[in-house]
Amino acid sequence: MSPEVKKNDPQNAPKKPVGKLARPLKVTAQAPVTVGGYKITSVEFVKSAVSLNGLPKERLPQVAFLGRSNVGKSSLMNALMGRKNFVKVSSTPGKTHELNFFKVNKEFFLVDLPGVGFAKVSNSKRDEMSDFIREYVEKCKDLKGLVYLVDIRHGGHDIDIETVESIRETGCPVLLIASKRDKVNQSELAKGLKLIQENFDLEEKPLCVSSIKKTGLDQLWNDILYAISRKNEEKEER
Image (tube, rainbow, N blue to C red; front, side, top):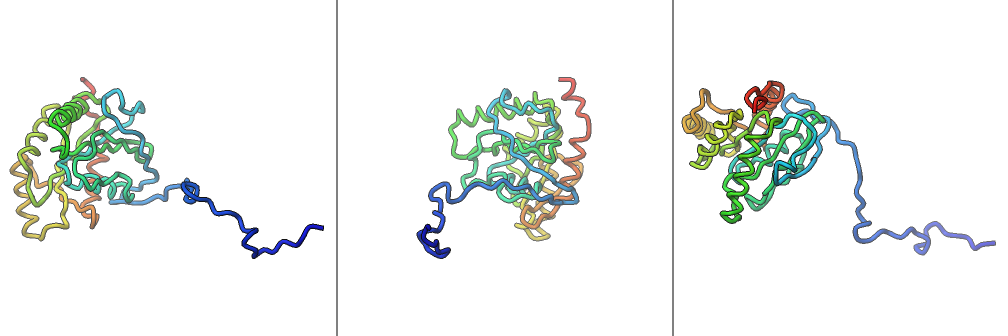
């Protein structure tokens, strides 16, 4: 007969995995979340692209996000999708050099564009990235609109104004958003909104959002869904 095996004998305990096997990846279903009244059942990172040939082949509506480096673009996208650290928030402004596509509810894409200003890159790389963004905005027929973020504390720099004017010239709808609402008091908020309205020639004061306090996300989702649902006739004709 074989000797009795003691359950608590360390020699008989299963060996613990080491290295990469010590923390195996778990595939878990994403729990539905509701952000600003909009229910999100799934979010998926699809791909990155550095040229028009690299855009997703799936013909779904796209809404892109743009703004100066460190304006809170990635944080806002995470807040909108109800996910933490899904869109990578870099500690080095301007580190993102490609277009990143996130599919929401299997119905449309939210697109993270490189930050305007492109810190820490050469002039030639900056020009290359600017040309790619311009080409994407002009030629992507699935792009339904662009959300441009401006720091409420600054009111918009010259490069912000120039970039927005350039995008408007392509016929792409631009939604101006004032970010970092949690960084200002009520008086500073009023001054910042008025300055942005004047600098960007807006009919009304822009929506102000906070990724931290989730302020303004309900209205922003309404605007995004409206852009997705409407037919962009100018782009259809291109």
